[in-house]
Image (cartoon, rainbow over all chains, first blue to last red; front, side):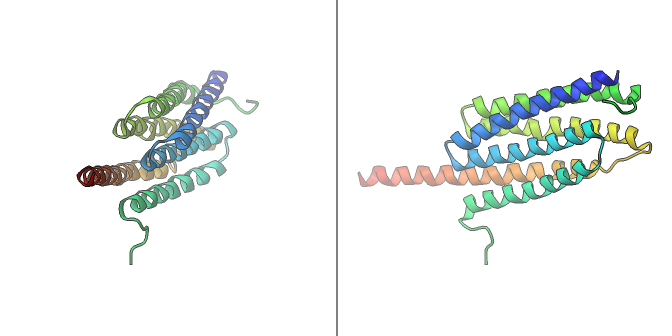
Length: 93
Length: 115
C-alpha cells in the first residue's frame, strides 16, 4: 500500500510541475499587467504545493518552513504589485 | 521508499487527497491559460489556492503525523495563512483590474472626442 502512496506523490508532483509550466507561460504571454500578477500569484501557490509534496516524499520537516515563508512573502508581494497598479506607488507618504 | 511503510489510515485517504490536489492544480492552471478574460481567469486560479492546497496540506498533516508518531498540526499554519490571504489578494487584484479598465475606457473616450 505504501507504494501506491509513493506513486500518488509522483503523480501529484508531475501535475503540479505541469501547472507551474502553464502559469509561467501565462506570466510571459499575459496581455495585461494584472494577468501577469495573477499568474505570478498562482505560480507561487503551486511552488508552495511542490515544496509540501517534496516534504511528504522525503519525510523531513525542513520543507515546511520554506513553504510557510513562500506563502507569507508571496502574499505580501502580490498585494504590493496590485497596490502599485492601483495607486502608482507601493508605500504612500 | 526504503523506510518503514506508512500505515493504512494514512495511505488510503492520502492517496485520494494527493490525486485530487494534483488534478485540481492542473485544471486551474489550464483554465488560467485557456480562458479569454482576466475576470474569468480569476475563477480558475482560485481553485488552485483553495481546493488543491487544502487537499495537499491535509495529506501532509496525515503523513507527518504518521512519521513523527504524534499528532502534528503545524501545517495548519500554512492553511490559515493561505485561506486568509486568498480573498484579500482577489479583492485587491480585482480593484486594480477595474481601475485600469476604467482608465483605459476614459482614455479611449477622450481620444474619440478630440478626433
